[in-house]
Image (cartoon, rainbow, N blue to C red; front, side, top):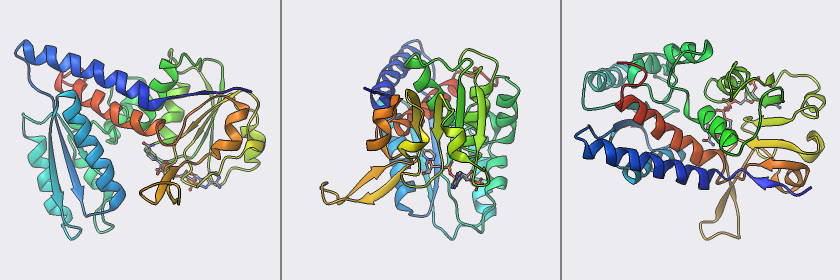
Length: 295
Ligand code: NAP
């Protein structure tokens, strides 16, 4: 079967252009430049790369960004007081704390300290709760990006069997809720699988759409896929390669080379879900600056 790529790189570039145009209009009519603040704790390579990508993207669309860095030894109290300071700063529209954070700091406490009005990552329980019952809310970036990627490729979800593999709070669980929502980008019949799921392959073989968010390199193989399925690969793994200048390349949770020929659509890694995640964060920041959800 000949498959089509769900090209997140191309679609995210289109959305960035749309955002940049809107920012120009806002500024031309005397409005405020959207402003995203990011907190980065420590010097983890992957987190550095993700935050640098977010800061760069802000610049590309005309947003202001502020990066606040802390050492790994920062205390929970110090971090909380910085978040409260940013919450109170009217000039800042959105705030993200790059995860993971060191183990001596409670992730839940940090997330719950962020003002839901500025929680453009959509991790705060208030936003997750609102999203779950279908109220306007910041939807976390990766699930939102996946939904947008399907929508802009005219992939029908209504009545389809979507199998989500992985139940994390930032990907699997929210994407399963979005796809089962009673609206035009939902209406799917969703099965949420995880490490205790029995007969995973029997379930994935019934899937019209598979969302793979397992965090295991090339976990999804061709024998797990129905002919003509749509496959969205969320996984990001850095693997050694002697074919690239950097000495490594990115791969996903799906064994692309053998799975792709069975698919109607599939996301590449890189260039699929990753860029859609960043652009969704930009969309949320724009929504925050326009006070569309919270006044
Ligand atoms: P996570 O928190 O590690 O969760 C992994 C999920 O996979 C868990 O629910 C786990 O089940 C399930 N799982 C593990 N082994 C399994 C198995 N053998 N069979 C079925 N399910 C299994 O992962 P995450 O944060 O959602 O991230 C997943 C991947 O996406 C990672 O590679 C991450 O780097 C990547 N990611 C990419 C983006 C992006 O923008 N592209 C954004 C976020 C994450 P249990 O709950 O039972 O443990």
